[in-house]
Length: 80
Image (cartoon, rainbow, N blue to C red; front, side):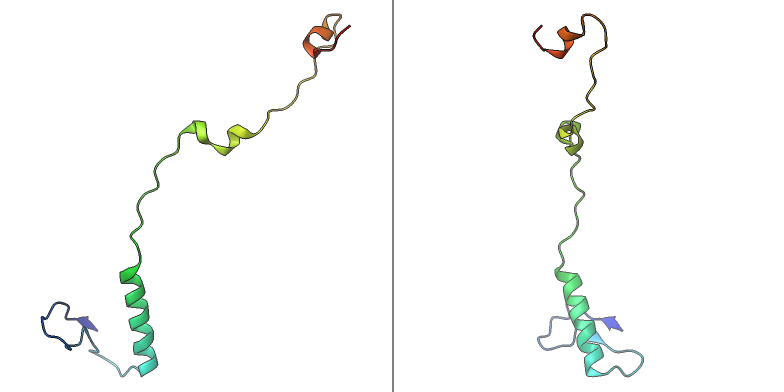
């Protein structure tokens, strides 16, 4: 199959079957696939994210219990 795009004639075929005998359904499927791929937007690279906006930054770290010493109440924020 070859394409003759831009021949300048209205009504001229854009596709030509070179080999084989496709059914009308097969040609219709080919036209749908080619037109969908031609109208698909081009993929642009995604801009890189700043580490400050990473979702993992919203997770809380593990809780640490205060050291069990005689001044442990100071780090626990409990009045004594």
